[in-house]
Length: 102
Image (cartoon, rainbow, N blue to C red; front, side, top):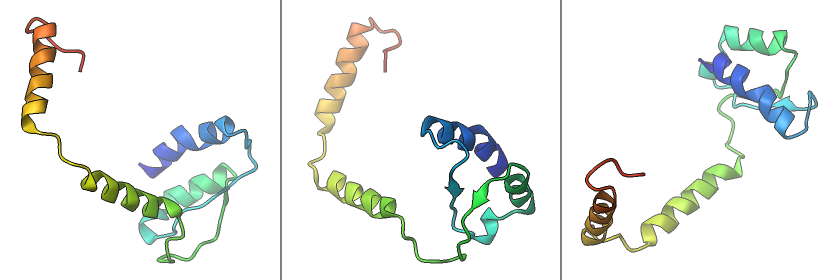
C-alpha cells in the first residue's frame, strides 16, 4: 500500500514543487513504515531517504498546527439544529425534492 502511495504521489509532488530529483525523503522510520518492499522501492527509484531514528520526537510543526485548529474550532459556538434544518429544507425545495448540489 505504501509503495502505491509513494509511486502515485512522490515524484509528481517533486515535479510540482520544481525539485526534480533534488530532494531527500523523510519519514519517521517506525518499523511499520520500513517494510522490505518499501525500502527496496526507495533503492530502485534512487530516492535519498533521510536517516532518522525510529520513535524520535516529532519535530513537525503540523501536529501543533492541527491541535491549534482543533481548539479554535471547538471554541466557536455550535450551529443551531434549527439553522441546519432550514438550510436543508431550502436546498430540498430549490431542488424540487430531487438531488441537491450538495
